[in-house]
Length: 328
Image 1 (cartoon, rainbow, N blue to C red):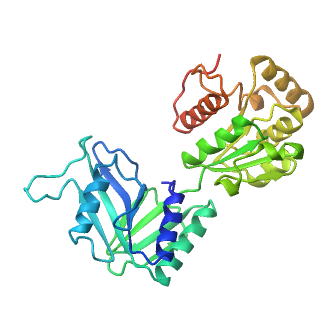
Image 2 (image 1 turned 120 degrees about the horizontal axis):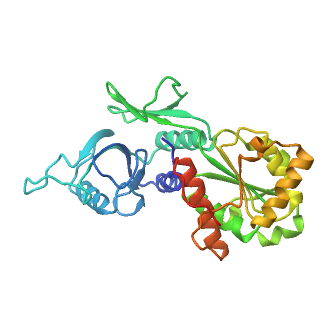
Image 3 (image 1 turned 60 degrees about the vertical axis):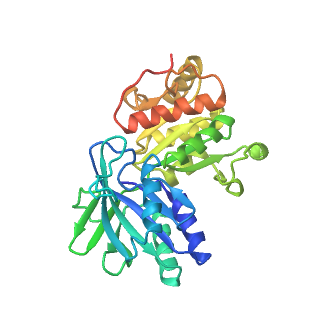
């Protein structure tokens, strides 16, 4: 599984530093229909919330159970859907499924803060790792990924081992309104995002900087940018509409093991781009077949945000192995 709730961890860090007690829930397995995937996070200090493990019903019930004095131990596994309420009836999600949760009670002390910082550091590395939680003590630690394991979660005696795979990342070539919206959507979808450009005169056009909760632009040659950041879980998107940016980055991407390579533009622009790549980079038809262009699903998109939605929809569909209608 992949961690997609970095913002939840950041919120927990703030709460712990404010000396608040925190309950952290992680979805470790589901039975039947369930609205949130394994690995989803939900945290609360008993009043405020962060993240989600259902459509809202489970979070409400969980807060009520905390206020009734439950979950006072350091950590436990809890099956929502198999327990009973005061009337003796079984709780069930509206979709008909049940969820198993790992519940951790984090005390506002330096040990909890340090454990969370180590977790955040592991996640920010974008590499695979495991997180082991001791159900008796509640102590968690980060371990190297066991490459032989194909399970997202495993329970071993008195501990739970959570396996996190290498993070998927989106590498954006070029500043534009579309790339800004793609960056926002990609981060919401759980991808890490990086962007580069060489046109420093456009610096003022990029409003989604780290100061505004986004990402900062790497001012470097696109080919170097791709070479430094690409891996088998990378999505490389050329969105500059400028051959100086797009072509260099695309050539580096075509020579890499990037999972997905796409370029924005009309059919005419795409044909011209492919001719240049073949002529300058001497790429074969097989090489060029890796390039998705024009990028985006056919949803009738016209505005920058609509185009961004169509682009991320195609990327997500490709990652999930689903073939959908292309932009015509």
